[in-house]
Image (tube, rainbow, N blue to C red; front, top):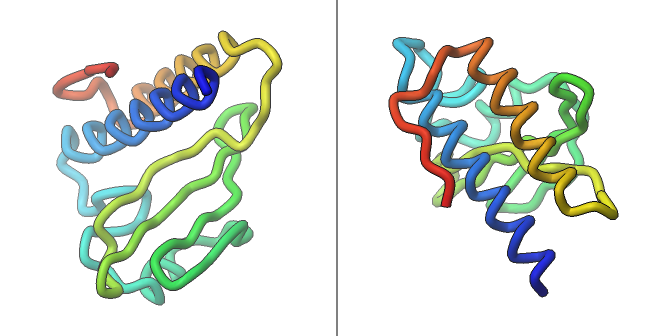
Length: 122
């Protein structure tokens, strides 16, 4: 249970961090090459990666960032994109490795998009 809470906390932090980065730059996209409110079909046209999972309200793609594998998830409400983020797609026996993965991803995103306006880990 504790491990799941730690992993969930890290995933939430990644989601928040990716959202902050998207808001901190003057780019025409909200996340990757998508904008909030896009339909699932519109989002599908922006992604070239393999679909890992799809249902009516969610679609996840297999992506590689740096040396790590992630799932890039898009969540829809009434067929409009309203949430997205990265999920770790690897299992570690040492829970500290999840923190290391987060730090690596954070550094990659800062190099690409610049420092976020706020950086809060919960």
